[in-house]
Amino acid sequence: MKRIFQIAYDEESRLQRAELLLGCGYGVISVLGNEAAKVLLSSIQHYDLFIVGPAAAEETRREMVDWLKANYPQVKILAMNPPDQQVPKADYNAEQAENWLPIVKERLVNSSSVR
Image 1 (cartoon, rainbow, N blue to C red):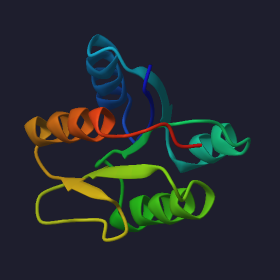
Image 2 (tube, rainbow, N blue to C red):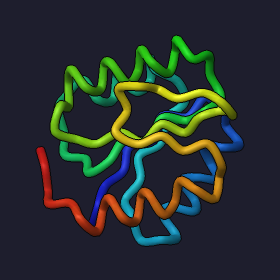
Image 3 (tube, rainbow, N blue to C red):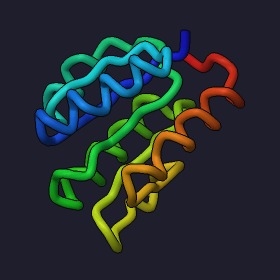
């Protein structure tokens, strides 16, 4: 089972995305905010993809992507963005809700397990 770690910044979106991903057959760990993510990720574990939600300030989201790249350099990151915004160091950027799930599916079908 492919494992996704989601960092969300609002509870409703966190629950909706987690439910959708679980329904697609993925294992999902979902947290609210950067600090909760860093605590859970402080002991290196296996994940196939990170998702960074759109509902935080650009600086907060960039900080999380930078931290993930430093601590999990082999794992791809999907940044979900408000309109006209991207996180340059993320591997994938998606603006619209309907655009992110195909990226997840494509990435996880084509990935091999990375630790």
